[in-house]
Image (cartoon, rainbow, N blue to C red; front, side, top):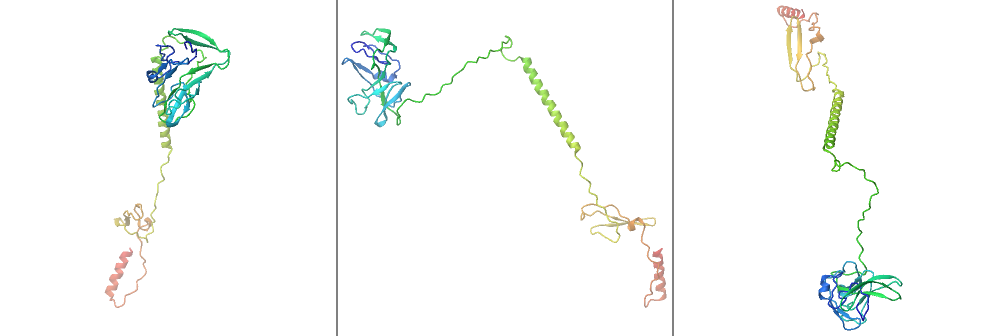
Length: 297
């Protein structure tokens, strides 16, 4: 700061008369900020911000009622005013400060009364030397918490040490059309071969399957049995008599033609003498015997 104060401020908005530095302060803050040279140290009129969130690289160093907060630059502490100026703004009039390390050299910008600047190194020769900064205070939209916000991790890029393989100018724009066409043809050929092998395998499996066994039902040639639902048809050829049975759904299958007496012809009736009937006359007995004799031939 210019004489007679000789204080070191971090980002002083008005370092000299008729000179304003807009770096590191919100535009709303600078519009209402006023510097007053009423004493050796001077003073200022600082606006209140609402709704207020600490700017980037600032930390919440004081919190009061009604979500009131006072923020200082990162690395600075906050000193409340010795006398409360505004009960609604208990941090108004306070100062942010940071201790210098003894024997350390710092680069500062010096101002004179007219506002001329000079960049010069400055050495902290004694202990207790401090840099000052203006706090920014206001009312937060929600309950505040003291401290600095957690920094967002940044993506860091590392340089690869692998030496790139030199390529020709013609190949710098990616694979050639011939390479792309060859890859496409090779892919289609492989797909066609795979499809052909699949079809051959399916046909081989289908041919290896055995057909289901035939179910054959034999019809017994027992002439003494008769089946319901069958239609008997008699056919005479020469002296042989055949009996043909029609299909019936009762037994699930249709049988073939059956032969009477197993294919040996009709039964021959016994030739024994038939007993005489009581009360029959001789003529009737003779006709019956003649009929029986004919049937037996």
